[in-house]
Amino acid sequence: MPMTSHVPAPHLPLHFTGPTVLVTLVGPDRSGVSTRLFGALGAFEVEVIDVEQLVVRGQLVLSVLVTEPVGSSIELDAAVAALGEELGLTATVERGAGDNRPRRVGRAQVVVLGAPLRPAAMAALTDEIRSEGGNIDRIVRMARYPVTAIRLEVSGADPDSLQSSLARVGYEQGVDIAVQENGIGRHAQRLVVMDVDSTLIQGEVIEMIAAHAGCETQVAEVTEAAMRGELDFAASLTERVALLEGVPESVLDQVYDGLQYAPGARTMIRTLKRLGYRFALVSGGFTRIIERIAEELEIDYFAANELEVADGRLTGRVTGEIVDRPGKAEALRRFADQAGIPLLNTVAIGDGANDLDMLAAAGLGIAFNAKPLVRDQARTSVNVPYLDAIVYLLGITREEIEAADAADAGRS
Image (cartoon, rainbow, N blue to C red; front, side, top):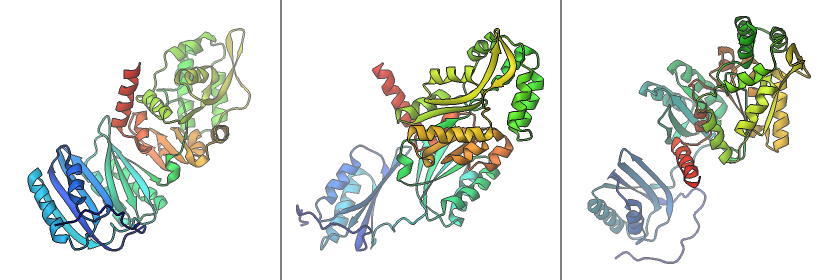
């Protein structure tokens, strides 16, 4: 008969190298399987080394790695087989030496977003990880709608090299792939710095104002060239604002009232603020609009350009220092300093060439539905139209978002 021992086993080394037993149960999921398995194993003098459980469409895979019991191997095998038969599950017992091999250096989190996500893309992704010397330790679904998001935990590959090679795979397969190095800093508070026009909101504010001045097409052409990096942003802003001379100041309120946020924008901000994230808006747009957005969404910091107004009308000039490409990166650094958050824990999101310095300065720079120039230079690119897809890159699942929303609704 196996004997139950109440004497604590000696502390295992970091990577146990003695004989081990891997017990696995596979079959239809039901309540209490893990409790019953650990109860059966508790009759033997063993120590748990590792546990993994997965349920897919009601099918359970539960694996427990334990130390080899002294003098009780046959009894353990029989107990596991009997439990499997009782529960209607396939039970296997495998013996080996040591822990699941120590996870290698180069730990990274790889997230793939697809709408749709096809097997060919996953095949190309996993093959490239293998080619980079990586091992996939775990795969978890982050979301199933409005995009499919899958997270892979990878060891053994250099995160920087992996980022470069997987960017090519993402482009070829038409999916978005983000790579972040795993570490304790990933769980720290973060500062999210966002561009506004065509990122947080749909469309460009200056073009909306220009529509009231009858020069929308002309302004849009200059804006598009500037966002592609073909024109100096500060010079192009001065040129475009000059066309707005004489527009009534009240038009700014009308433009604000007509703004539409990017799909998922409120969800992203609400979700991350629950976790203590701070937010900043850094815009080449205008303070009168940006400060109202910041107030509505409870944004912590903002920087934008100031339109000059005289006698209730726009003069066609901006006052003060222009928030241009270098200015956006400087604002990110300034806000990170004010928030007491290291640059490594900042996230920048933008779509235009004037966002490139900001994206490069941040710990995680994300090109969101960006111009080709920006998409090619950013470390991470998201090309689905849902801003809340970014939370999956930060390790948050759709189910967690919905559960938190439901809890808040229940308290209101």
